[in-house]
Amino acid sequence: MASVSASFPYTFTPLRKRYDVFISFRGEDTRDNFTSHLYAALRRRNIETCIDYRLEKGEELWPALEDAIENSYEFVVVFSENYASSTWCLDELNKIMEQRAKGCAVIPVFYKVDPSNVRRQKGSYGDAFAKHELNFFHSREKLKNWRFALTTAANLLGWDSCHRYAFLSFYV
Image 1 (cartoon, helix red, strand yellow):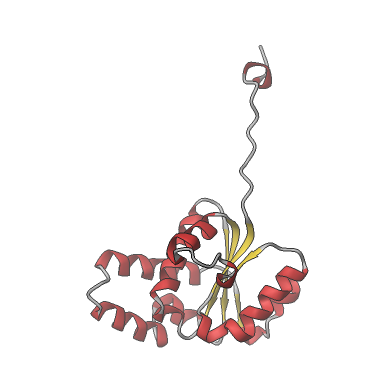
Image 2 (tube, one colour):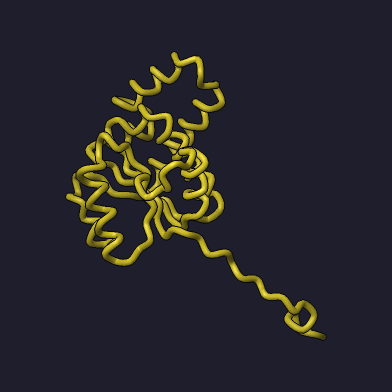
């Protein structure tokens, strides 16, 4: 019997993605503190990291973010107090969870928020969804997808701020 390589001369080579890690975060909450330190630590280890200010100026924002997400191997999602108030963050998270379904790793970080509030959309997350529900631009399907993405991501093993960012030494 002929070997597979003899009968099929082409080999499969996976496409190289542009980023090792994509960081999703709410800028007003963590850009100038936790997230900037995380980004710097990853870059010091030569881990190619996508963060929003690395996107090309002049590009349309959502297509550029979507492309960056699709071209990343792993994701760090920094859940903070106002993360769910941003429809951009929720759309990013939804896209990230689609990539997780394709085998990519997602690491949640709970920055000064209780993981159960994220999981159950309570506290500031509940307040944000109450506002989103009043906003006529968001369909019920979109709200359902956002809630599912938050619940699923919050059920993943991750780190919370009560551990004093111990994951930085572990991850980087």
